[in-house]
Length: 327
Image (cartoon, helix red, strand yellow):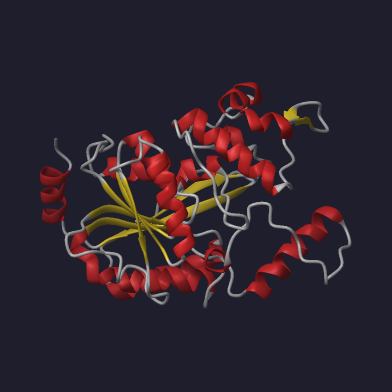
């Protein structure tokens, strides 16, 4: 089963096409955000249309905006990441969480399962810890976040310890086997209702730089091939590229998920490039996934999506809902 949302070809505005429960659908109220994070005031400026905004090409402005959003909407008093680490756009991250909630609801008579009984694994949680923050604050879910980078795990743990609202609800684990995805972080006692992942997109650093330069040339005109474009969102090597790129990473995840088939309700992963879907579908067919869904999401001026798969039989689904989602 493949689910598709409407995909119009007219020009999109990010704020109007986010999930209906996404609190970031409206234009940013910079006065309110600056009240929550006073340092944001130093980055607020008028854009070419005379509206208040920030310079989204400035990594410090983007990070401070994220800090303000997480404080204002999700009650996070402390949030910071080391220089150069991925600083994701909050609205798009929130969309993934809300669509995941809808995915669970489709198996629960339209009711979103909430609270501490719902366990989520965030593969590649990063230093930012954004998915666990949003998922816990919006739905009360419990999270385990895994990452291959010890600095990312340490930073994530600092965020957790510095915010009482996250203590006891989010755990960060170090993945010591860089070639593995679930093995090594999925403990014997673990049962997850969802896994989520924003996989590395590029096949190598050079491929990432080439693509970034193409985008910059399209926006800025002719650009020197020797000039390395600045990534305002940051990102370290494991966050941005891997062997086989996005399709390779997700396909490996699919193959590894078979070992945990009866210990997870839905496995999911973002898939940024639609052309990668066919290879992922083939792998899902090869491993015998019983259910496969592809759910579109609007993010920025493009359509993104995530793929979800499950191995559970009908009787297993009923048992899961009756025993794990109640109370």
